[in-house]
Length: 402
Image 1: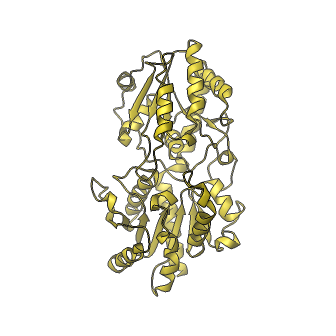
Image 2 (image 1 turned 45 degrees about the vertical axis):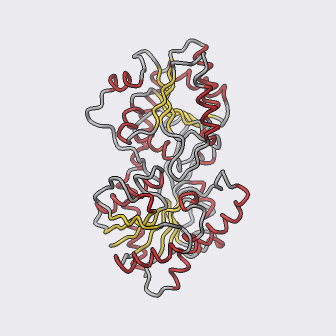
Image 3 (image 1 turned 135 degrees about the horizontal axis):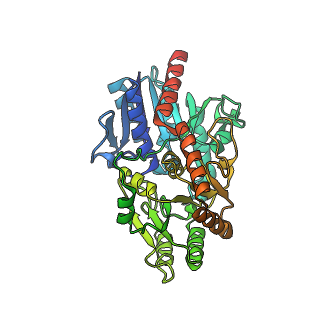
């Protein structure tokens, strides 16, 4: 079995889809798949996993992409072309959206599969949302199969959990539910929690709250700042650790927003109680998060299984506080978030509720242990072995039907 993966970003570029593509390629290789990755020239430097072959040759995601794909098809003769799709990663250009249609015109070409990582309208370009939606539908309608990574997107393209086909206007294509995995590795065997906390600046008696992710408005950091300030005023021995960078290589950092958060967390009332890590190597992320007491992810639009930061916290077995939303509604095709069992769910923007939830976790060690246990039980559903095996089954099914 040969697979040609197409992704707008790839390591050393920073971004969730970049890491997902690399880890999927490695997982498929372990199962015996001959994988080639076609990606941007921006990924032409740095180290790469030895398991996958990378063609970092794409200069533009417009119509020039079609020639790049044709060259790779002629070179490696893949059984399937698998697009890892997120609008921003392809520079808002339509070459990838029309690729399955062009592929159908070329006799003998392999089927195209598309994984939709995020079907939300890009927050920087809401006015062209309807046009982007049509382009996304066009991509799905000419593909042989559609993979979705979260309940909201599954319901959007399929209509109901029991469906095995997309909606009529999405082309009635085969639809598969496959959650994303974590791009953060398991904790190292020699992890020394006390030493890492010392590096962070956290005293043994401090309750360490970790935020993980890009510093952008959708992460809901203002309520977290409010809650943190209140807890300090109450005399709680709390420290906040901000793990991550302003944005990934395919994202758009919101410098004014980041600046406003930094100013708030440098106010005299909380100064000296906040650690900013900046961008970290994945293994260091695992260590820093595991040194914390809880992970707080107060997403403005509510939690979703599309959030790699959430999956990382689950796989590391952390007590998690996050916000309710469509992604928390139980869905038959995806792992389930259970309030007060494997996660604490709060209303988005609810400062008082967030404050009280963190305060409870400070004093209730048994509750923290319960949440951590729930995270560990849930983690198996997001493992790369399972994701890679699901993907290979889809490839084999398409080859049988060809």
